[in-house]
Length: 452
Figure 1 (cartoon, rainbow, N blue to C red):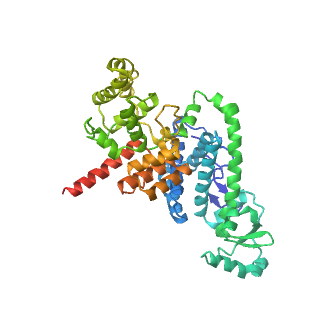
Figure 2: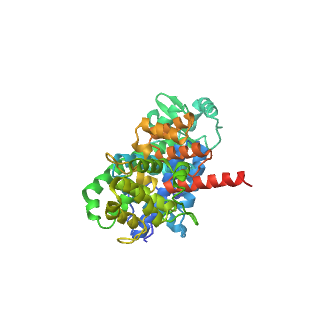
Figure 3: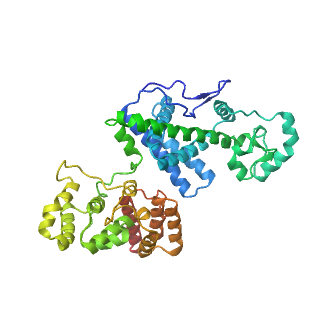
């Protein structure tokens, strides 16, 4: 891969920063496998940030989370390649997330948050160098002007719990409307329409510029994608780009846990105790109607395979239900093949993987379908009733509904898990089979502790 020679920010006095501003895509040759792997690593960071924000983490907790995520996922065996990976992954995900307004909004928010916390840990010299790169038309307040407002500035700094150290004594005067978050938080002194920004607050100023630039860039990228790139790259990059926004980044659940098998005689009890709502609903509908459409058969069938239902038992399970509706002969003719296919015994003999939360959430069930994510696809009334049947109490139920209203569907499922099991799930729910495994682990632990 060609090295990036001007990927860092350099000021007039030679200060170098490893925090790029992503003004333009670098002229790099990128291997196809790196194109995807770098993007996935950055996506792990952004999704971790999203989860932290959804959980209401405090600023200091977010600062630690962001830096830990970055250190874990964006490292490279060659230190000189770290900046390359940073820039390449950003521009790949810019392509991925430019394609709809909803995707653009999410990417813009997460990248801005990432930039904010990375900017904060830079030295004062680097921060000033980055400000210069943005061509911000602001100069530090002169000593004479600083002395004239020093008492007011000290009052504001004390009010927000900060002392005016020698570093903080550098202030910038900017139009107040350019730092709305500082004004809203009453964190600045305002005089004659200008806000006095301490050096340790300039992140708000820079973030406004960064967000504005990236927002415009995403719209332009979308135009290029629609008019040119998608067609040119339809056989090479387009499939990767289109898959990344819904990609699942966790463990593969195509095989059950070691030694984990479920038997047909236990399946109803296990469904009640350890199935997530999406699978519990499909299971109940299958028991009631003795039939599921294709989407439901795929979603539930692959999940059951992942939790340890063997092929012979799976055939017996589905045959017992469907035969009551369509007859055993028609089941063997029309449906048995699909079950064997999921287990890699027909067709291409692919070992199919159970669906992740992301895939289930992004599905579009039609009339008569029962697959998809209940937190997204159920009406509020139906969701409340289903959660109550699962044993979710009134207070946690309201917390779950609050997350649903804000479209944090996986977090809503996580809160459901915690309410049902009386145990925290810090990693969050990202896959129905993860929900099942974690549930079984907790139940096994409770069982062994009660029977020493």
